[in-house]
Amino acid sequence: MAETKKTEEFLTYKGRPLVRCGDEIYYGNMEEPYVIRMQIKSKKEVNGLEIADKVTVQLMATDPYLSPRKQLIKSSEKKGLYLAMDIADIWLERALAGK
Image (tube, rainbow, N blue to C red; front, top):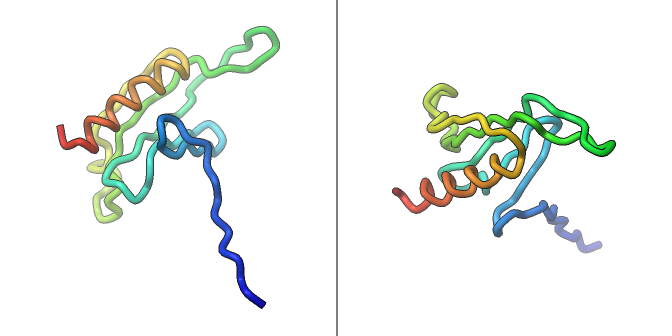
């Protein structure tokens, strides 16, 4: 029997993977030098839907040999997921471009 290689398809945002685990969202490819971690700190209900209210955005290095403290490059707190995704994309683009 031939084995079929199963590839997981992730949601993408502007061509990069977007993975959610509970209240944490990772944006970017783990094979690249940097990735964004977003943590939903609080939620509110709007029209019967629970949406993110406060989100912490962190630019992190993916080097496994760095200490967790040195992996964190930038951090900010944004109001709402839209603003968090906006700054996350800008930070990741700049970091990967070497600026």
